[in-house]
Structures are given as C-alpha cells and as structure tokens.
Image (cartoon, rainbow, N blue to C red; front, side):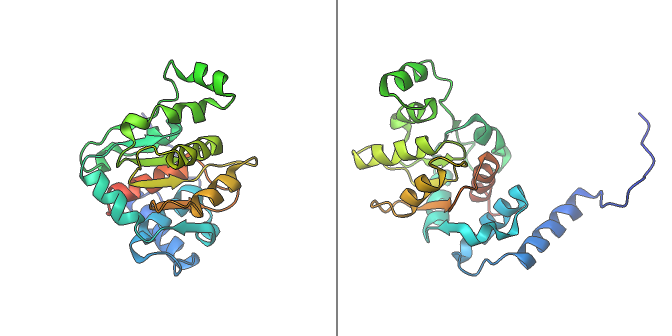
Length: 214
C-alpha cells in the first residue's frame, strides 16, 4: 500500500496530539469550580465534544470520583441507556473487567414501553433493578430514561454508587439533568446543565472514572 504524498501541514503523531489537546483544554477551560479529583474527567469530556466552555455547565458531586472508582474497583457493573455509550467504554481501562450492560434490545422492552406509554429507553431502565445496587450508571441519550431511574429510586429501588447524567436534546434533556442535580437522595452524580450531552460525553466520563491515567 502506497503512502500518499503530504499535501497538508498537520500533526500526525498520536501521542503528541493527545498531549497537546489536553494542554489546550486546560489552558482554555475554567476548571476551578470542580472538585480537584474531577479535573481529568472534565478534560476528557471536553476532549470528546471539542467545546472548552463545557466546563461552565458541568456539575460534579464532591464524592463522584471516589464513589465511582471504589465501585468499579470492587467489580460493580456499568449500566447504560444506549449502546453507543456501552460501545464507547474502553474495556482495557476497566479495573475488574467490569460488565457493561445496555438492556435496550431486551425482548421485554417493547411490550413494557407500550404498556406504560413511555420510551423504550425508559422501559429498559426498569430491567436494571437486579443489577442496580452499587452499580455505576450512565445516561448519554434519553432524558426519559434518567427521569425513570430517579422515579424508581424515589419508589425504593436499590441505589447505584454513582450516576452519570448527560442526556442530550431539546425536549426534557435540560429538565432531567436539573432533576438529577437537585435530587433529594444523596447519590454522587455528574451532569451537564442545558441541552448539551450525548453518548460520547457519557463514555468519556466513564473512561476517566475507570482509570485515572489520561
């Protein structure tokens, strides 16, 4: 296979790109309001979306990092609302080869969604109950799924160790994240206020929590 001639001036060294990217993010983002141990999570999330002002909207519980890392190091599963989030988790970073579960394609989901008059993403969250106690959960897509989990918890469902809530969109996304940020049960969380979010942000947060090394 023939290497093409160089027609553009760009950095091609992968390691240098990473180092320069993280340095640029730290130079251009305000990280001062975040818990000190959450800095690398914020940097990775900015890296995933390319928007250095993302940190202005980040809300991170002071115990988020310690709670999530302890859970993962103990072998807790990761539960996600979207296959894109699950696919974005770098398995080699997981400390205990943790299970990463998305139950959206479970055969029971369509029937539950129809019966309850809700989205499939929300219905799938109900199937988490047997895995929920002490798990790390992440939402990158569906506001209805995040709302559904919060309602389950208020009704007495087992508590996860930590909640990553970054659903994206124009209907319900900002509201679901506000509900998480003001939730009456003290469960460590991370969220991004407003409409921004997405699977890449959720996966990048999980990857940073799974291993401190950038």
